[in-house]
Amino acid sequence: MVFENACVEVPGRTILRDISLSLSERRIAIIGANGSGKSTFARLLNGLAKPSSGRVLIDGIDTAKAPRGVRALVGFLFQDPDDQIVMPLVEEDLRFSLKALKLDKDGEDAAIERILSRFGLKDLRQQPAHYLSGGEKQLLALANILLRAPRYLVLDEPTTLLDLRNRRRILDAMDGLEETVICVTHDLEIAAGFERVLLLDSGRVLADGAPADVIARYRSLAG
Ligand SMILES: Nc1ncnc2c1ncn2[C@@H]1O[C@H](COP(=O)(O)OP(=O)(O)OP(=O)(O)O)[C@@H](O)[C@H]1O
Image (cartoon, rainbow, N blue to C red; front, top):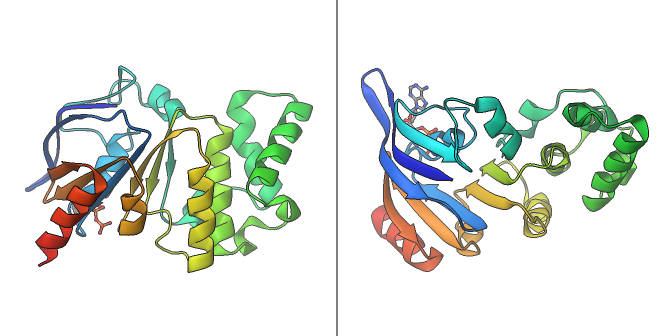
């Protein structure tokens, strides 16, 4: 994942300024104050947002030119899992995600079974998805994304709406992931466990490096 002088501007306002960097670590956290540009940064990674100038490349693919190709590589988990549930029942919701892979019915069933047991959701297979708890919904959303086998996972504040137990479930699920994870978070404990942390401030990357250093810098900003 490469940013080349990427800027995001809206009329009268610059949201991200001239960002150039390369992301290759398996666990990268994005931290910073409200409004510093974190979500916009995350959205650039799967083409949900486009740079006004400069480029964002995912495995060499320009997000502005091939948004579909990029979305196949980069799964995106939103803060609010309700935004991501599209079908009434848990099983139907998972099956919907599998459509693009064009498996036969047995293949779909096996994939659904595997992902439900991986996330401890087997008993919920026939439940209405909207009745799940917040943590279960977030796990379902994550399961839906992983079914499409992305290479990268971008998570935008995945634990913000969750209680401690459900936060733990998401963190445990995240720990077990093979995929590269880029996580926007206000949860500094999550950031502390990652390999690399970026601190955004007013649309700029103010610090970038090992968690302890970058988190200390962030704390010093808050005074
Ligand atoms: N499409 C847009 N048009 C105008 N302003 C926008 C747009 N998208 C984002 N912004 C503004 O850009 C700034 C950065 O937004 P962004 O959501 O990226 O910040 P953030 O760091 O994720 O904030 P938070 O921690 O509060 O979620 C905010 O002030 C926001 O209001």
